[in-house]
Amino acid sequence: MKTIQVQYFALLREQRGLAREAVTTVAATPAELYGELAARHGFTLATDQLRVAVGGEFAPWATPLNDGAEIVFIPPVAGG
Image (cartoon, rainbow, N blue to C red; front, side, top):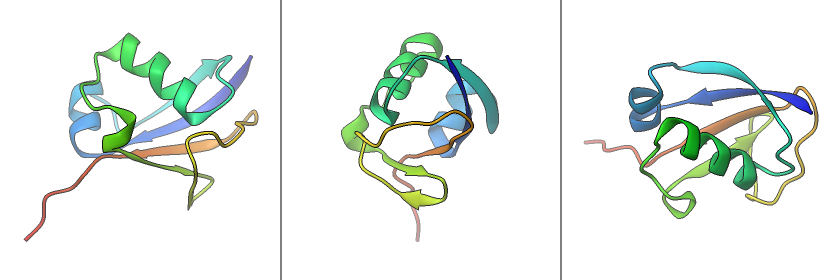
């Protein structure tokens, strides 16, 4: 088990009701972690609609997660 710091933006923050949380997980990658969180919290966006950052850098969904990692899930943002 590891503890991951997760930050949510835009729609995901609205759906979760939080901007940030610590999650205890066995997920090995951001993709696995997002799958767990989507099932738990009812997220409606698929991974192909999101970007993920690990430790402040955009990263592939298959990046290995270490204990204490900081993950940000970034949905599309409308702008103008």
